Image 1 (cartoon, rainbow, N blue to C red):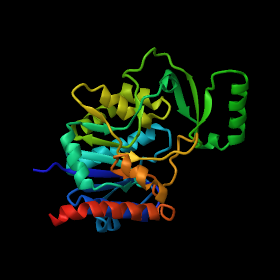
Image 2: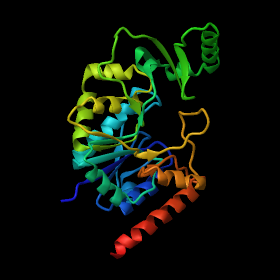
Image 3: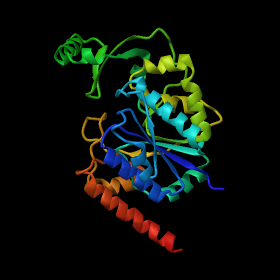
Image 4: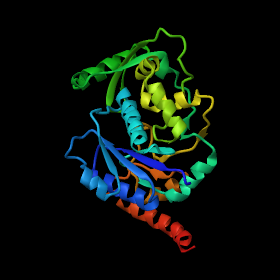
Length: 307
């Protein structure tokens, strides 16, 4: 019997684009399940609209904040809900701003044949500062005093001090202090948040999310959404983690926090990446990208359908 796939879309903007992605996923993988997870309230995406697109909705109370443990909590919540509803062999976590750039049915066959338990895109650079210090997000009301925070951070740099205050990714102010522990509870690894996970990998992550000590450690690291799954899964010896992207992203210049919206010129790179999805595809600027990719994928699928 063929192995089952569930696609989890973590959504927060543009409900119509999310529904279009859900329809495309079901077109490319008719037997797959699609879960649209969001915390935008009942008016953002309702169950009837999702059903019409071949998907289901998870309306969450967890409001994710960029660079905060809440993003990991949202991912774990969605993984647990997909397991509860369908118990799939594989769960694919992508953004609501993703769009398929490969024939998903063919890609799923490659995933099953790979023998891996998780497909993750790693980042092998040194990020010791992310875990050697405890990092805390400045509450929203404090972040409103942006001018003062910028001035304080500038004074730190001018004084030659290691900056305990910084603007992370241009969105979130965080501050830090030295950590007492000499080493992390798991070898620290970092990489892309978007992932393809086997049933065993999902169970491992959910169990780790229930571990108070692990949760407390990663919640106090800088950008825990980029490290939790990578660290946990690489530290689980029975699991095999393959270095492979689930979502292609393009970055411009020194801004490595925010992928650029994709356009027609990004089609070759997205397709060459081997990733099944690409982000971010924004309605309007991304329409030409989506049309071109869909045409290429459909052309690949046509010979298979004729056979």
